[in-house]
Amino acid sequence: MLTWLKLTCLPPIGAWLIRTLGVLISIRYERAEIVENLHREGHRVVFAFWHNRQLLMPLAYRGGGAYALISQHRDGELIARIAERLGIRAVRGSSTRGGAAALRELIRAGRSGADLAVTPDGPKGPRYVAKLGVVQLAKATGLPIVPVTFSCSKKKSSRAGIGSKCRFRSDEGSFDGGSPSGWRPMQPTPTWK
Image (cartoon, rainbow, N blue to C red; front, side, top):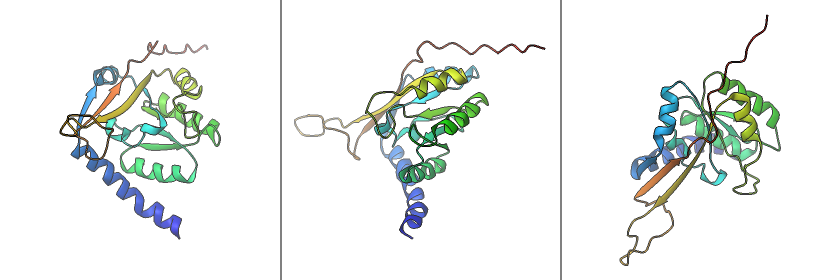
């Protein structure tokens, strides 16, 4: 009963909170033109961001129809339901459970023209250490990996002007998309008859 309530009530509240944060803070996108140019040219990307940065990542995505790798764990179900309310489709799996099937599903989605999103350090870590799966995904789809992060700051958080760590009352948030490294468009595979 408690699980049903959690999975029924929390997703709309969580999606609302994320959208509300997106309205309350001033968001600055840095280097967004990299992804915009790739999209304009008809290319899709693999967004990679650290696991502890996932909360506000739906606000960073300005495309349509991305697929995100989300764990099969109980908490993953809640995250998947919130993400789907924010327009991001969930592919369920991780390095410890259902990973091979999830990788195949992500490859199909990427090859069919969707953006993909993964946390290369995963929920079990080690933190800030990328696992090989994101590279395998990029290689199999031909999509570039675009590292994305979110940071926030509150300017003049005290009278002395000393900065502080991000809190919900933050004045400004920033999404930064790095350059896709070593990327070139995937060449069509020749078919032999």
